[in-house]
Length: 286
Ligand SMILES: NC(=O)c1ccc[n+]([C@@H]2O[C@H](COP(=O)([O-])OP(=O)(O)OC[C@H]3O[C@@H](n4cnc5c(N)ncnc54)[C@H](OP(=O)(O)O)[C@@H]3O)[C@@H](O)[C@H]2O)c1
Image 1: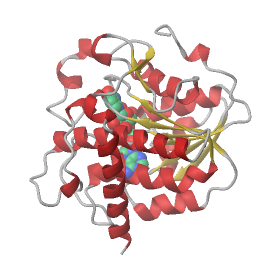
Image 2: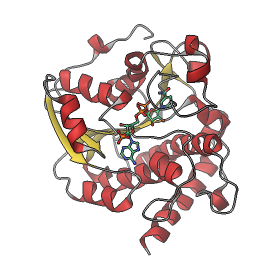
Image 3: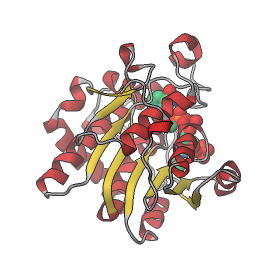
């Protein structure tokens, strides 16, 4: 499995995939490769013009639509306009270690981009999903600490990296609880996690605390990083599988099914996080 490449992608003709944040970085590579394998790829992006330019001339079928996952109205509009089956939803859009900021809904920008927005998007689209939801998380979820009483960084002093790590732990726990609910409902839909390791994208360009900037020898090319996402989106993996690079520390190498960190396997915490996140979404709507 560690030698898996994009040449191993199955024929995806007739399948529809949504990739969020697909105008650049890992999302663009994921969209490009899924389309090359035959899927109709819907790119949910903030900058439609830029994304159209990025996929112009690439082989395959692309449909670029506006989506700001940190804006709950935008999430609702994207999901509300969906019709027909959606085989795979790839929640890829994300930010890392960004300064404190509030969204139009008054929510923490980083937590909403990485977790709360994708939580709402997934729940709104779930009735259309036929195969799976892929959540792009990070090995840094292992360092995540969740404060369910202050998930949205209102009462604590904000810390960019701590918020990133917590949001990526939230993604892992969201997948766990989503899979539990799907199983309980007898649904064949899978919830799958993908960790790109460390890939040299723009994600950490502004972040002084990130290893991408300090230890290039530990890093993947963006093409390698996207392999975990592509494998999670297409391979026959079990529900709530954690797909990440096979190499030491899950940082580099070909995709393999690995194990999430201990906190990411805490089913009771996952249920409480679901309720806390739903509470944030409800409060924002009031
Ligand atoms: N690179 C790594 O080493 C690494 C490691 C672990 C996990 N990840 C995860 O992989 C995913 C992709 O990251 P990347 O490395 O490809 O970073 P990137 O090159 O910075 O790309 C991030 C993408 O997310 C989009 N995005 C950000 N905020 C958004 C919003 N509110 N609504 C819609 N799209 C939004 C960006 O769109 P704009 O062009 O509009 O900004 C961009 O397309 C992220 O979830 C990240 O946490 C990456």
